[in-house]
Length: 111
Length: 114
Image (cartoon, rainbow over all chains, first blue to last red; front, side, top):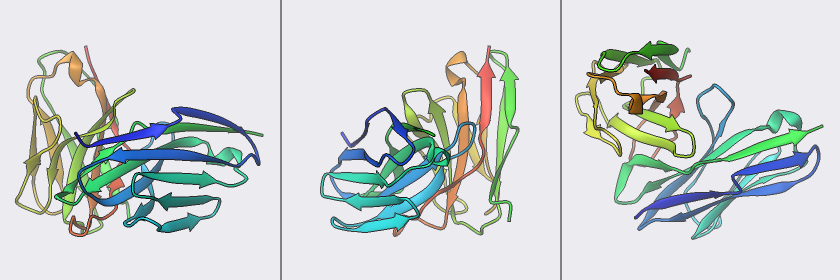
């Protein structure tokens, strides 16, 4: 069964304390991996797409990387405004119509 | 550009009542999607429309119907609401699926069925 697992479920960081969020996947064929940010009471907001192992994308304090089994979202020197739930999703090579989402990592950054 | 808009924002229904959730996008996207989000379950696909004139079932289609009214609009109908359909519903759109494109989400509809 195709599956996406995110860890940890929740993460509390002090402002400036860098860390990483993990998204591991077991799928029969990966076509693309997506990272989204979701603020409370709002819809997910697109961050990155990664298509092949070794690929990296950066945006401000966020950097996403991809291997053959997992993806990491690195957060460097986070600020309180980075607090949100981060969602990972994959689309499959044999069915690119759909996204399969993980349950997310809830990040809280304290001043 | 408004992006993806959804109406209503909140709704309370009694068991057995029906309602339609509306979604519209102004980005000229080909594909549209309906998801539900429940605590601990993540986002689950209900139905999607890869292009105008087509609709397909997702992971959890039972109890729902959809209509792709035109390229801009994609509605979700609950014919006879049940408490298990209490959830937050998100509509999304994307340019296309080949190659897979990022999806843009609406603000959500919070539905409670009593």
